[in-house]
Amino acid sequence: MNTDGFKMGNGESGDIEAVLERARQEEAAARTPPPRARGRIVKEAKVSELDSPVLRVNRKAEHRKYSAFNMILLLFGVATAIVIYIGHIITVNRLAIDADRLAGEYNDLLRIRGQLQAEIDRKSARERIVGIATRQLDLHPPTGQANWIVVDESLLPEDGQPE
Image 1 (cartoon, helix red, strand yellow):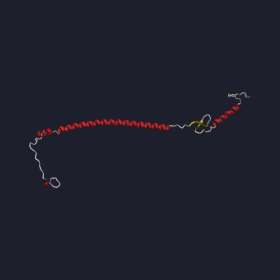
Image 2 (cartoon, rainbow, N blue to C red):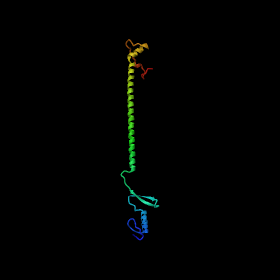
Image 3 (cartoon, one colour):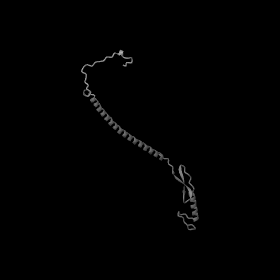
Image 4 (cartoon, rainbow, N blue to C red):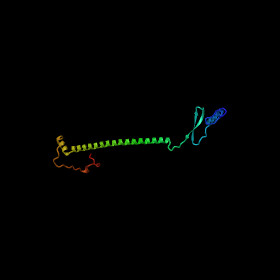
C-alpha cells in the first residue's frame, strides 16, 4: 500500500496523479497513428469520443484470382450466349414449321396439277372433239383422200413471204 492507501487493480500501487498521467500517455499513444504497413489499405475516420482523426488499418488487400468485374462480365456473356442459343432454337422450330407447311402446299399443287392434266386429257380426246364438231358445228370428217397442194418456190418473192 502506498501513502494514499490507493491500490491499483493490476496489483500496482500509486497515487491518482500517476495513474492519470499514465492514462494521458496511453491516450496520446493511441492518437498517434501506427506506422503504415506496406501492402495494407489505410482509411481515415473520425471517432466522436476523441474528436480527432484516427487512422484505422483495414485488412490486407487481396489479389483475387477472379475479380468481381470479370465474374459479372462472364455472367453477362453466358447469359447472352444462352439467349442467342434459345433464339436459334426458336428460329429453327419456326423454319421447320414453315417447311412442313410448304411441303403440304407443294403436295396440294401436285395433286391439283394431276387433276388438271387428267381434265386436259379427257377434254382433248378425239372422240369428244369429233362429237362436238358434228353436233354443234355440223362438221363431218373427210371421206376421201386428202389433196396436197404443191407450191412452186420459183414463183415466190426473194424474201420467201407471199405478197
